[in-house]
Length: 133
Image 1: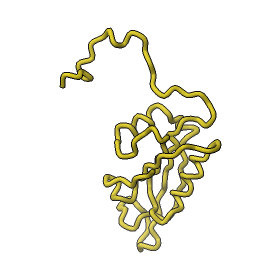
Image 2: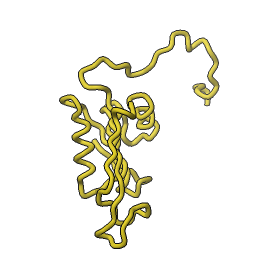
Image 3: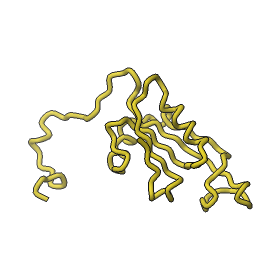
């Protein structure tokens, strides 16, 4: 499942959910998306347990499943979306930009916590997550 978000002009920001079949398959998906004719500037790949239509879930995966030194791919000087105001170049055919891909999937073949469980957290008052809202 994948989604090109309205906030990215239905072109510049793509979120892809997939179950990896082998180590680093998400990187192949990122590189394929970068080279597509959609020309996204931002690509985020998540596991299927993340709803690509829910930005809070995507941000959660970015926060808890990404090691920036390992999971971020940056490629400079690629053809950009023609109407992207941050791109460089005079004519539409010369426009370039950078693109970034983020692998927000759990490491393949390794045990990985899906949700942090803190013993005794129920004993504290958290009004911001109260069910009475």
